[in-house]
Image (cartoon, rainbow, N blue to C red):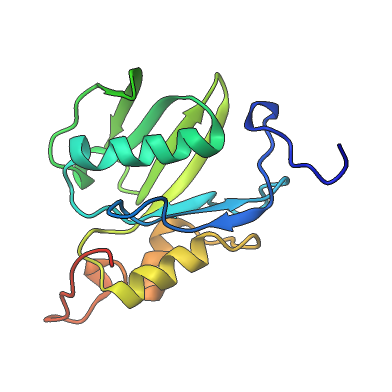
Length: 169
């Protein structure tokens, strides 16, 4: 049917940007364009560094929009304890941990479809976090996650001493 967006199984995403997924969950934004030109596919601002608490809502929201996920790659230094897998909505999601420190989470759908999301630190000031998320979902964004966090002040190391506003709003 003309004008209808293809389903996620086709490998293409519907055009548009989606805001926070449901009340009480961490903010998530996706750059959902057919051509996926930007460096990042979206941004996520978790409430804490507890992956067992934070990841189920992210996986549920992404599964709703992208289809079933098979793997999630995480930076081991950014999280408190990482299991090798989690069961989310009755499905096993394998977790890959590395110490790359690149401020991203990599999500795999199917065998090869990879999505890269900026991870905004939980303690980022709200205005800086929103600015970082806005930058990450711009279709023409060419900056990496670390550069976006530094430019917006969402990276704790780039903020002036004493400016520790916390938590997703």
